[in-house]
Length: 250
Length: 250
Image 1 (tube, rainbow over the protein chains, first blue to last red):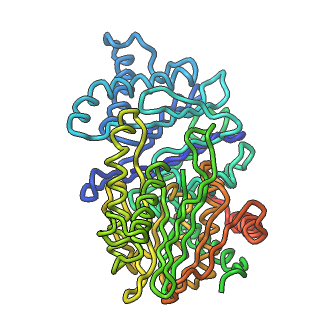
Image 2 (spheres, rainbow over the protein chains, first blue to last red):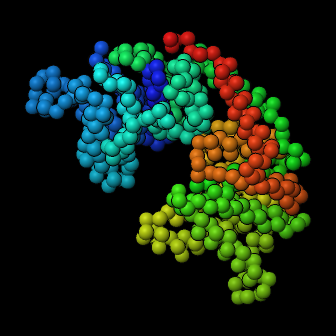
Image 3 (cartoon, rainbow over the protein chains, first blue to last red):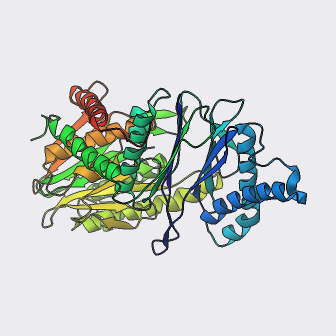
């Protein structure tokens, strides 16, 4: 499985993804689930993906082939590439179309073997002339957009880590605090679900910068994340211990 | 949806269930999901249920009909009732068989209308001559038993509330602390999922007592639960605020 979070803050966007994939417990591997398209001073687009890895890798390959077709001027070069899409809505449509194309190609073969061809994706970023925008793409290729009331989307094993996001995140949360909250959300998820694992890829996009602000890979033994996990776990146990026990029980 | 937890401690067992049911968001109602069979000084058996309400109500009706057949001496009276089962394993088998019978009766009609006939149940308690035992029944009627390594089972919307149980609960956790932990687990679940709602039914079974220790219904405005929710939420935010922000982010 997978765990990914993307947040649209007033000051920019945070993207985070784990990198464990598994096809059965005896086939575990590390693959990044974050793909970044950057055209400095014009756009920054990040794609997070979950679900069938062959399908989601196929999606980014279709997007990349379209980019190369532009460069080499081959016949496929008519439709706009993700680096030419005039709006984030168009960029999300390009990704959704690629997802549909992969489902069309692979779906029937996977279904015949009773294999799940589902894949969900998050597409977020900013294109010059627009504010930052964040989309959640369903496996059918359709999508929804995050607004002020719902400033974040999650992919994959989202439930373990949702309560802390629900408690903390609003559009006006400072980015440092939001990044801290995202890492705690990952800690809760990894504590209860072994199919989500390190390293965590994190990306910070400062609003109106049109380039990557910071890209960080958090590995085993990362000092900040290790400190956060220890102190969060200890703090939770302390708050828990300080709460009075029910007096209706012996 | 539903949220239920059952824990097997060294000192006894705790059972808890929410009571919101919904068939679409415009058809929400309150039904208890906890059913208790008690024969003082001989046995205490608690059943928690989730999934299709018609199926799970059918299960308890089949069990109750068998009990009445014993009392009135009708033809059905040959198989042992849940109050006669010699072990908890046999009690779980009786419930599993009833689940299979309901699936056999209703399954084909529900499937024809594309309605989910799934139902999972927890059966726990103690019968004289045995230690307390706790079983998780799948929708197919088969089941697994909790051991020392896994002292609790959950039903329904289990992921939001699992991290705190994972952090706190072991077989040696005192019952007051375990009850507090269960209520915090319900709080996390209800905060992130509106399909789980009050009141919460709680039952405490002291080991080797063979009767209900305490049965409690926690409603809206329950002073202990309200205090717990407020102080837990406040404590979490305080621990969160005290953690250093990442220094790699502006």
